[in-house]
Image (cartoon, rainbow, N blue to C red; front, side, top):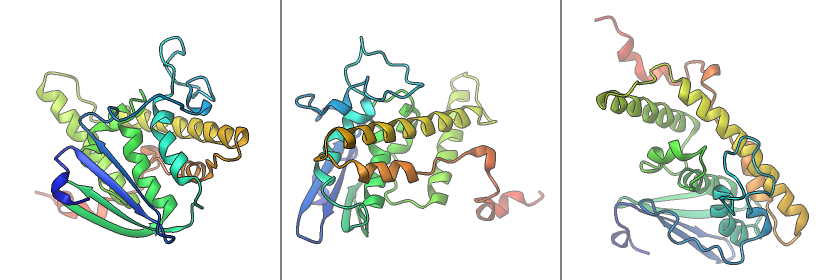
Length: 235
C-alpha cells in the first residue's frame, strides 16, 4: 500500500502483528457501505439481536443493525488476538502516513470510531462530519476539541442557511446521551455473540466498548480552557 493509491476520500488502516500476520482495512468515506456484503453475516448482526432500546429502526424495514454490520469483519479477523496485544498500525489518510505502536484495543478503538460514524446508524450520523477530519489515535482532549468544534461549526453553517443554530449545544448533549446507549447496546450484542459461539471472541470489542468514554458536556470542568487563554483577555 502506498500513499498515492489513496484518494481524498479513502482511508486505510494496516495492522501488523508480532507473529507476522497483517490485516488491512480500507474504506471510501464518500461511499462507506459500498464494499459491504450481506452474505453469511453472523446472527448477532441482525437488527433484532439485542437491539438498542432507543433504536428507531424496525425489523420489517431493516434486516441488519447498521453498526453491527460494519463490525462483523473486524470481529471475525481480529477476535483471535487478545485486546492487550501490541500491534504496529499504519494509517493512510489524506496523503499522510501515520504510524503507531500500541495495543490492539486502542488501535481498534480508533478504527471503531470511524466505522461507527459512517455505518448508517441513526444515532451516529451526526458524527459523519468528524469522520471526514478523522484523527487516528486521538487523545481525550483532542477528541473533545474535535467534537465541540465540529458541532459549533455546524451550527454556524446552519445559521448561514437561515436555520436555527444551537449555540447552547443541547443537541450535542442529546447526541452523546444517545451514543452512550448505542455503546451499551453494542456491548450487549457482542456479549450475546460470544455466548452463542465460542469461536467468535467478541471480547476485544466488548472491552473497548465498555471502556469507551463518551464525553458529557454536563460535567465539563475546563479541560480545554488552558488552550484558549487569549480568548479570555478583555478587549
